[in-house]
Amino acid sequence: MFFNKLPLSYLLLFFSIPRLAVLQAAELQLSNGDRLTGEVIRREDGKIFFRSPLLGDLTIAETEALVMATPETPVESLAGLPPEIEVVNLRDAESLRPLPARTDPKPWKGKLEFGYLNQAGWNNVLNYSTRGEAERASAKDSLRLNARYLYGKSNDVLSTNRSDASFRWRHEISERIFGQTLTSYKRDDIAGIQLSAEQNAGFGYNILKGGRQTASAGAGLTYQYREAEGVEQGGTFLGEFFQDYAFKFNGRLSFLQSLNALYSPDGRAHLASSGAVPVLIDTHAEDYKVRFNSTLQGRFSERISLNLRYEYEYDNAILDKNGRTDRRVTSSVGYSF
Image 1 (tube, rainbow, N blue to C red):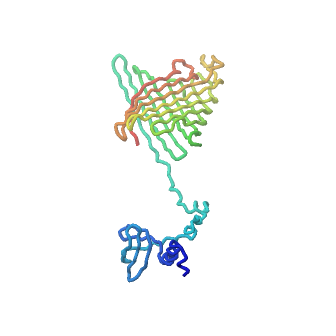
Image 2 (image 1 turned 90 degrees about the vertical axis):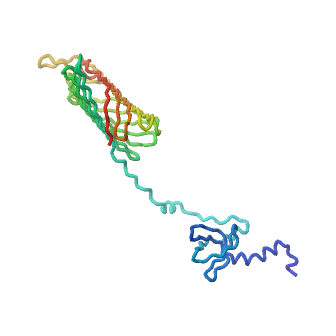
Image 3 (image 1 turned 135 degrees about the horizontal axis):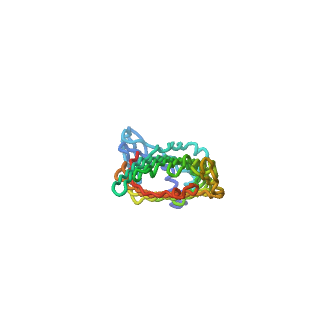
């Protein structure tokens, strides 16, 4: 006969074809949440006859399981050929993805600081300071506002009466490069500065940008308008270099530092009063100044902190040489909000 001439392997394949056609590849989801992969043999009398490669033949009530049909095995895979791959349009796939959640900028957070010193004895010293700062950050922008008022007396003689404020905006151009503007105001009765207003614009580079420490440096151009005793009133342009650094020792102790250096070869002339007539005493007074600030901050709690500051400032444009340097060490208690 014909079948007697065929090899045994061909006969087994021939007789298994009807059986392959009957069985249907499927996934069985049980009521307890388990899933089984195998083949549905048949469904009758409210029962599912299922064959699992691991558990063998099973009989399960249709009320206890749900058949999740899977695509039939492609003919290509039976013939040893790779199955046809469905090409997905990437543009269509992107449109089906859910939109990313909108990230609103973080709310404003800030801190108020109060410092007080009262010394009596050989010298009677009274000093107090009030500071405030607030900042807000988003994915690309950061805003920072600082304000300060210093007052002091030594042997009942006024030694400090100064107020200043600044507002800084930084915009991240890339992971490392940013642009910034800085607007500042200053008044100092002891130094004879009635008004000093500055507007800076520049670019910077993030040298370090980690979880524990950050550092950046940059440069820009500053326009300064000043009204002060002994200095020709008006505005001038200065080149500016800036740098800042922050390091967190742990969750309670941190160190902050900043430096600004401004310079202009075309400074304003110095004037001295002789009676009612001002007299020119210096026609080539270079205009430059340096500001250095450092703070060691320790937190007692989430709200309360103790701050130790060292501040240095030198301003060559001030006529009185003794008033050009301002150096101070202050301690203050801060409240964060």
